[in-house]
Structures are given as C-alpha cells and as structure tokens.
Image: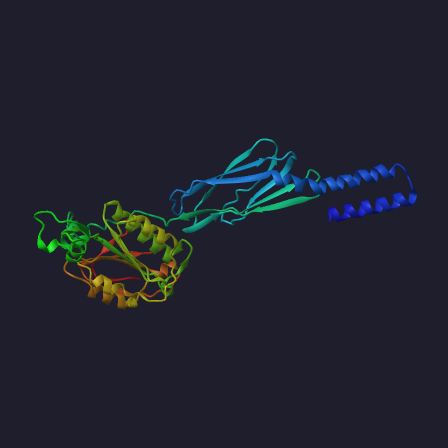
Length: 396
C-alpha cells in the first residue's frame, strides 16, 4: 500500500504542479519521482551481485547427532546492499539458520547448528535471498535452488551381546558358523602345474586353449547372522522416533554394527514392498550396504511375516543364526521359527510390544522354547538393558 500510495501522491503532485505552474513544485516533484525510480531499481541491481554459499560436513550422521552449517554471503557488484534477508526453505523442524544482514564489501559469515531428527535423505536448501533498498519501499527476492543432500543413518545403540547367546557357553562363537562347514567355490582358472589333481582340471577351457587349465578355489562368504526385519505396514504403530518401525530399524542397525565390529558377516531379509534380501558380497562393504538400506527403508510391505519367502531361505542355511524383529503377535511366525530350529541353530527374537506405542493391547502368549532368546522391547526402553528370557512368557 505504501508504494501505491506514494505513486498516487506523485501523480497528484505532478498534476497540480502542471495546473498551478508553481516553479518550486517542479523540482520537488522531479526529485520525488527520481527517488521513486531509484528505490525501484536499487534492489533489482544489487541482488545480481549477491551470492550465498552453504557448507556442511555430512560425514556419516545418525539420528540424534548435531550438525553445523556455515553460511557465507558476499557481494561482487558496486551497489551496496544494506538490508539482506537470507532464509532457509528446507522447513526442517527446529532449524532456522537465516539472518538479516547488512552487506558491504566484506564477506559475512555465520554458523547455524541443528540436530538430525529423522533418518533418510535430508536436504539443506533451497535458500531464499531477499534484498531491500534503504527506504524500505521495494524488495527483490531470489530463490537459490542449490541443495545439500545428507543421508542420515538410524540411531545405533548398545544392544545385548548377540555372539554369545544364552543357549551357549562363552567362547562358543563357532556356533554361528565356520568356514570349514561350507564347501569352497570356484574362483577362477590358471595354468596346470605338476601335482594338481585331475579333479581340478577345467576340461572345457583346456580344450579351448589347447593346454591344461586348473581351477582355483576360494572359501565362500559366510553369514554369521541373518536379521529378519518385519516391515509389514499393518503391524506397526506409533509416530516419528517413538514408533515400532523406528525402534525396529534402530535394533537392526545396532545388531549389524555389533556383529560387523567383530569381523563377522551379516545378512538381512525384509518383507518390505520389494522383498529386500541383502547378502554378503566381496566387492562392497556389507556394513555400509545394510546401513544405507536401513536409512531409507519404510514399513510399506503388504506381506505378513508368516507368508514371507524368507523362511525357506533360512531353512536351507547350513547353520541357522537368525534374529527376528517384529511387532506382530501372530502365533504363525512362532510356529515357522520353531520349524527352522536345528541342532546348530541360534535364534533370537526382539518383540516390539505394540501397546506401548499406542497400538492395540494384544496380550499375546509366546512359547518359543528353551533355545530361543526372547527380548521384549517397549517404548522408552534402553536397548542395553534389555533382559533376555528363554521361558514361555506372557507379554502384557
């Protein structure tokens, strides 16, 4: 309204100056018109030389960690910018790094701090840059579309010792698998050398190259622990960090980190919408592969835990070290777990009590047997203080 009112006043002033012919009114009217034009052009010209740089060290952040972002605003043109507003448009909760500054010939710097509130991809930006002239009549806004994307990993917490389950004595970690229990795999071929057995000769390649070629063998990658993560959307409850899916993902990440930290292999099976299966691979770091998946996975599955094909895969494992994470109270998966139980099996169950997360009070009764370690997880529980039980237990 101030700009419209000023333009109307200038128009009336020029009109009455023309009617009255007063000489003093002419320079006054011309000065006001010139001021109006300068105020209109100032922010449009000044904003062309203003640049904003945002820097953040992403690293490998997890939920709950703090981060620091550095803002740098500089002016390269000759027109000063006495009123510059920098505003972040990413709409992150509890993060308002913008400022109003006066920009001269020197670079203006400041640091903004925030906390990673949720896992997954987080974008810092875009940025809004607004410049006003000294009279406060006109402004010019520019939206900078540059974004800095950061992958936030789930929260990793201390968990009970998984490598020494209660059904075994301390030091019996070979129960989780040993290389000698798995047959070797063919890794390649080489020229035949004296002493090689005939069973190692690769006859098709020997015929093709017209010389004897021997097979080379290497031990396969074994999986010391399989994590079966229930991502059926119909069984999860709660919101944000205080939800069963976030607790389940955090448990999976914590277990994987613990086992990987001891030089062992971890595989993962999830009944999400894609039916994810993550097996160890020599070409990639399996710990990073699992964490990358857990950072972005969602409880979008439509297949109940009792109908997932994971049980057939688990049943074929030479040694069954399986950790099940689920809020499902369906006794069907309990029967499937008992069906894959073997003499060398190590079975761990983390049951997330839906009632503590705002879900229905199902009051289930699980009879998992003496050789299954059961952990009941409720909202607000400290993972490191979870108590394992091997008896029939009624959860309520």
